[in-house]
Image (cartoon, rainbow, N blue to C red; front, side, top):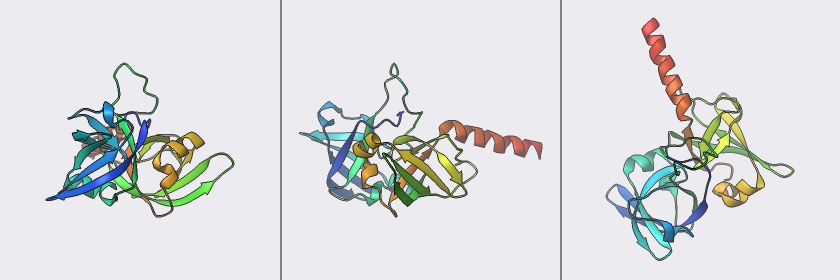
Length: 200
């Protein structure tokens, strides 16, 4: 479980394909603190550390992960947001994030404002994947507040610190992003669907 508060950015050092899986080796300032079998969020995708060497570590993404997220689009030299699993006695500064990507979206527009950035994304809404104004959403592992969700578009406001310390500075119009919707909202949507079926 994660909070969506990014700890650092990791750089793709090596990519190796094995069957339908891909092994990603990352360079990170946190590598020395990782352990084998540790769960780490990469752009919001929970992946397990399988090897450590110097300032690098390796994780494996299976086919389902590659299909449902933007991880499969990574190239050597690309950057990802990294967060270790939350500590139970720590503060939940973001919101509850599982590291299970629900869908991908595409950057529709980027506006640089006076001291902040406004990103608009396009996605495919479903009955279970809903967004509400001022609700929470996880984009590439970052916990953010939803702004003006209309039809298949929604926006987020990015402060300078988040822009400089996450991969948001690399997101451009057309970039694919990972989306994880609020788990509480998903449960409520599921319950409402089941309740409606009972009443019908």
